[in-house]
Amino acid sequence: MFDTPSKKEACGIFGIYGVDDPAKHIYLGLYALQHRGQESAGIVVSDGVTVSTRKGMGLVPDVFRNGELEDLKGNMGIGHVRYSTTGSSMLRNAQPFLVEQIDRFFALGHNGNIVNISKLRRKLESAGAIFQTSTDSELIAHLILHKKGPLEERLVKVFQELRGAWSLVFLSSNGIYAARDPFGFRPLCIGRKGDAIIFASETCALDIIEADYVRDVEPGEIVVADKDGLRSIKSPQRKNLAMCIFEYIYFSRPDSSIFGHGVYQIRKSLGVQVALESPVPEADFVAPMPASGNYAALGYAQGSGLPFEFGVIRNHYVGRTFIQPSPAIRNLGVRLKLNPVREILKDKSVVVVDDSIVRGTTSKLRTRALREAGAREIHMRISCPPIRFPCFFGIDFSSKGELIACSKSVQQICDFIEADSLAYLSLEGMLRAMPIPAKDFCTACFTGKYPIQITDDSTKMCLEMNTAGPSAWP
Ligand code: SF4
Image (cartoon, helix red, strand yellow):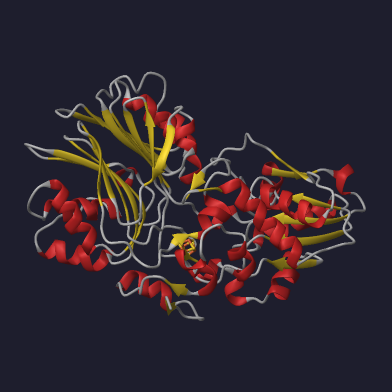
């Protein structure tokens, strides 16, 4: 992606039941899901009687250093990597969120965004609840505590009150629960390794521990892993789902399968569609903007018959903590991560493929760098339509000011990023590349058609800032 700084990713969740060393499995699972959140990481494990946790700010290997998993003992546990979409980035907002009372405990890790959070929180606060964090997870925890009856009944009641996106893993003294909202916004899959049952945001987290993929947790389903094995509590299926199409375009790892389909092939199909819609027959070659544009560029090359080259090389060893010492050399930071290959680009007409443009500022710097490296023509091709609307379901590009396509036409964006031509994939082309019917996707950041009416104060305020305005799902 051209504009990484302004588009934050969803969170990653992982749960496992029935192993002697859950913390080590969760550590590996979170490692595989690191791309979904880099601000904080946490693990909670239990043997059904005691519970222990470790959380911290930073990447998984920074939070869990040598030997620090040894204290986390039990036969089950959950883990979370976070990129804040609600609540600021601070340790107390790190997940999983653990509740301990005299006679019970539970913990939960959440991926998504609850859109009626203000209303629910006000209600809980007037009933005496005191919040320590500003996260959705704590809200869900309080809702569970304020319900009566067995845990499973409480969960069902809580999920009936929530509006928005949630894929979550939940640990109690009995076992691990995994749940997805009725629209199925975020992915969540089930795996098995011997007798152990695993839940993970993406299948790449199953691969890393050599577990087999069983199936996805279905939208609206609660799956329980406990001493009796695997159980399912299902709610009636909705006619239309709203799985986040952006998971396929950008968020999920290309080696994952989500919503039942492989991400790699879909990204390639998006590239083929862009080639069909917006060819550049006179170009010398196709180059990806690594790594976000790799698979769509491969598809574009195959769809167009043009050669494929790496015109830009990514430095894999640039951490998130790179410090830009002064504004004068800030732009050099762009070169630190991606550097053009002069002998490949010199005097060439290049089709550069990327997955999206958010703010356009980094895109401009990249285009300039390609031109300075000798590229004669730069034809930008984007493997999704322009992002014009904020997301309220767990992806943090929610401010209107951040979205260049909100205020500029495609030609104006092309001029701004200093490309010779710019073309986005059409909405129809994007949906054609998908193996799932259009009615089951959320495409709100492209269309403004939100699958859920946004009524909550905090989220509504965001919407009202958007000039184009939202419309409800047809
Ligand atoms: S608005 Fe966009 S990013 Fe957000 S859930 Fe819908 S498709 Fe995904």
